[in-house]
Length: 308
Image (cartoon, rainbow, N blue to C red; front, side, top):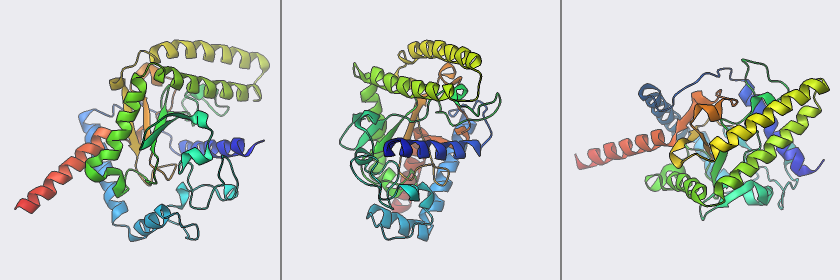
């Protein structure tokens, strides 16, 4: 087994552990006024708590300086697993202060990068979208699949820890606005949707292969895979019809994050394209619009205090 395979497997296991620890899987409209306000309040609280945490802010400075001799405690859970430190999954060995997404191009195959700009990457998801593909899945229970068909991520090229990191929303939130616009620009290109769909298809097929090695009977596995493939074809057609406004752009604020590097989740809002996907992360999913409103409100308040 290659180190790249080991690395991907460890990341998926981390996602599995986190997903299984939260057991709600009900539908939530993130843009319902009451829910939207809750997400604004959640972001503001997590942001403020992080920024007054002197230990976390010190660790943040050391992490951005790539200090491999520092003992990371507050940010430690988002770092690369200790067993992979010093091992090369991509072209460069992992360091103690690395995360899964830091210097992404040096630690991952080029095929995972679907688009790149001066400031960010659009990357594929290592988890498939369909909960039925996971051996531990039982009706009514949660599994580690993505938040919707076509769920992908947009990450900054430079070291930004999380949406609570001051640099994430510096300069009137220029970075996260660019990240959203990057995905939209990619989606509007002739081959953008097809590239993302092909990445989804590859992960989907890999998960189907794992199903074949499960303890299910051959007959039941064949029946399940046949149904999965049929649904994939139907969802693919619906997915390719999506417009930019049909996607959710959102964040998971520290400490409810799985990877210690800013990443924007992008997935369809349409219920049909989330039918077989997890909603267990919705409780912590903060739309970019909520983040921008909080930042704009705070900027206006500060300006008002200054003029007074």
